[in-house]
Amino acid sequence: MFNDLYDVIVVGAGHAGSEAAAAAANMGSKTLLITMNLQNIAQMSCNPAMGGIAKGQIVREIDALGGYSGIVSDTSAIQFKMLNKSKGPAMWSPRVQSDRMRFAEDWRLLLEGTPNLDFYQDMVSSLVVENHKVVGVKTVLGITVKAKSVVLTNGTFLNGLIHIGDKNFGGGRAGERAATGITEQLRELGFESGRMKTGTPPRVDGRSLDYSKMVEQPGDERPEKFSYLDTTSTLKNQRSCHMTYTSEMVHDLLREGFDRSPMFNGRIKSVGPRYCPSIEDKINRFADKDKHQLFIEPEGWNTCEVYVNGFSTSLPEDVQFKALRSVVGFENVKFFRPGYAIEYDYFPPTQLKHTLETKLVEGLYFAGQINGTTGYEEAASQGLMAGINASRKVQEKEAFTLQRDQAYIGVLIDDLITKGTEEPYRMFTSRAEYRTLLRQDNADFRLTPKGYDLGLASKKRLDRMEVKQAKSDAFVQFFRDTSVTPEEANPVLEYKNSAPVKQQDKMFKLFARPNITIDDVRKFESVECFIQDNSLDNEVLEQTEIQVKYAGYIEKEKNNADKLNRLENLKIPSDFDYSKLKSMSIEARQKLTKIQPVTISQASRISGVNPNDISVLLVYLGR
Image (cartoon, rainbow, N blue to C red):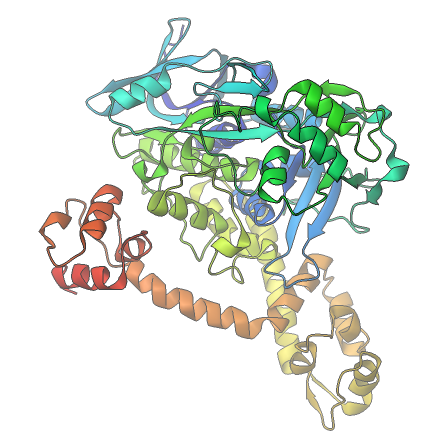
C-alpha cells in the first residue's frame, strides 16, 4: 500500500503535528501525516483561543518563520485583543478568540493545499528502529510505512486516561480512544517516561445563560492580527466574551464532591499545570478567596456552544452542574458536556537535542505535549522546529536552532532541553531574559530572513518585511536628524503636562519622553508630511515609536546578549568525560553527563551546575 519511502512521517495532527507536516512538506520533503481521525486535524481540545501572554509572541514567531498558525488564527478569529497594552511593548501580547470549527477547517484546507504532503488515517502502534535509527512506523492495521525520519506529536493520547468524578476510561480526548504501544516500545529502547495531567471545563449552551448579569468583555476597537501577511480579517464585527464570578456558595457545593474527586482521593497521582489549576485545586490552594473569575468564551460565530474558562474540573458531573447553576448568570445553565481531567504519558525533554531529535534514536523527533509542555502555541512552535530539522536532516543540511536572544521559541526549547520539566511547561514573558528584544512587533525582523533561507518563508513575506524595516529605520533616522523649535514644540508639550524646552532640540529627544506618543508628534507639520509622503502604515508607526522610546533598553539588552553569546561559541566535545573532573561537584558531574550540553553557555544554565563548576570545565577545556 505504501511502497514509497517518505522523507518525514509525522504522527499526530494536533497543533504540533500540523506545523511539523506543513514545514517539512514546504521545505521539499516527501511527507506523510498519520492521524487517528482526519476530521480532527488541528482540533482545539481545550479553549477556543490562540495567543495570550508570551504565547502571542510565539504565534507571531511561527508566522514570521513561515508557519501556518498565525494565518489560521486570523482567518478564524471572532475577537482580537492586545493584552498588557498599559505596560511596555515587551509585554504586549496578541490574543484571538477563535471559531473552533473554522480553525480546524482552515488548517485542514491549508494542509491539503500543501505540495509534498500525503495523509493517512490510522493509529501508529510502534516505530521501526534498526541500529538505533528510526526507519519507519507500524500501524494497528498492520501496515508498515518506511521513512528517513519520524516526528512524534502524540499530545495527550499516549495511554490517555480520562477522569470524571469516580469514573475513568481510556481516551486521548473526549470521544476519542487513547494511543497504546509507543510508550512501552520507547521504554524498551531506553527512554525515561512520566505521567502528567491536564483538565478542561464544561461546555454549556449559551442560550441558557443570562449575559445581562455578567460583565461584557468586547474586543479591541481597532483589532490587529497575527500574520505579517495580508491575511483576510473577519473582525469587522467581533463577538464579546463575558466575565462572572464563583462565590462561597459555589465553593461549598464543589467541596461536597471533593471525596469523589480523583485529584483528592488519590486516583490521579500525576502533576497538572501550575498556572492553569482546576477549580477544585483553586478552592483548596486559595482557601482565603471567596470568589474566582470565570470567563465565558463563545466557541464560534454561529454556534451557541460556550467554553467556561476558569472552571476546569474532574469532579462528578452532578456536582459540576449543581455548582455552576449557583454562578451568577448560570441559574438555568444547560450542559453540552461536563469537564474532565486527563492523564497521559510524556518523555522528559532532557532526552532530546536542541533540534528536538532524540539522543537515543537517530531520526526520531518529539514535539508538543510528549515533551511535557502545555498549550497550543508551545506545541505548534515545537512542531515547526521538529519539522524543519527532520527535513534538513534527510536533505543532509545543517541543523536549525534558535538562541535565547533570537526567539521565545529558542527560550522554550532551551528550557526544556537544559532544565527539563516535572510539571506541564507553559511559556511566560518572565522566562525570557531578553524580552525587550523578543517583542511581538518585531518577530518578522528577527526571523523572516531565517525562514526565507530555510525555504519556508516566501519571497513575498521577505520583501514585505524588508520594506517595513526600511521605512521604520528611515523614520527613526528622521527623528534623529530633525530639530524642532520651542515655538513649535511647547504647545504640544504643555498640553501633555511635559516640561517645555527653552531651545531648539532634536525630535528624537522629545519623542523619547514617556508621555509623548506618535499622535502627539504627528501635530508637528514635518512629521505628518514625512508620514504622508512615505505612505507609512500603523505597523511602521508603532515600530518607530518603540525604537525611539526604548532605544536605550534595546541597546543594553543587545550588549548583554552579545557578551553571553560568546559562551555559545565555546563548544564541548560530544564525547567529553565529566567523571574525570574530580574538583567539580558530584551533582554537576551527574547533571552534565545526563544533559550532555553542546556549549559552555548551555552547561551554565543547567540546574545544579554553579559558576565554580563552569570554571573547572573551562580549565579542563583549555580556556
